[in-house]
Length: 212
Image (cartoon, rainbow, N blue to C red; front, top):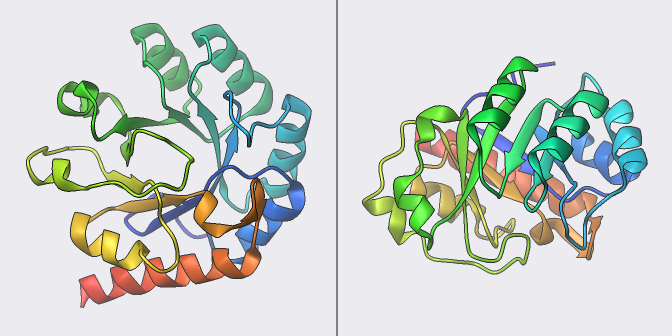
C-alpha cells in the first residue's frame, strides 16, 4: 500500500456498506469515513466492523464523530480499531490523550463560519477539516475565511464538493486533502463508483497541475 498520509489525500465519507467501501478503495481513495454520530449515514457498530475488516490494509479507515461522549468515542476506537478519528465536536484534553495513546490520527472538523475556526489550536491535531455549517448536506460554502486564517496543520477541504468543482476548490484553497460524501452518491448513503472515480481523478489532476 502506498503512503496514504501526504498531500493529495482523498477521502470518501459516509460509507454505509462493504460494497461501497470496496468500490471506493478500487477507485483509488486514500481513506473512507464511517459515521458513528447522529446522521442519516450513521452505521451500527456491527456494520462498521464489517467495513473495517473488509478494507483492512488497503485504505485508511476513519471514524466520524460529532455528538458522541468521550467515553463512547474511546470505546469505539478500542473495540473497532480505526486509523483516524474525525471530530466534529469538542476535543477535550482527556480524549486527545486517549487517542494519542492508541496511536490514532486526529482530524478536527471546523465550521468555517464558527468562532472555533479562528481560535482552535491546530497544533493539537494531525489535520483540520474545513467544512461549512451543515456538514454532510452537500451544500457549498465560502472559503473566504482561509484568506486570513493561517493553519500549521494540513487542511482538508470539505462541504459541497463534487467531481465538477473539486479541482477549483483545491486551486482556491491550496488544500492538502479533500473529503466528499453526498457529491459522489446516487442516493443518500449509497455511493456511485463512477462518481467516486471521477472525483478522485479530478482531485489528483488538480494537485498534479499545481505541482507542475
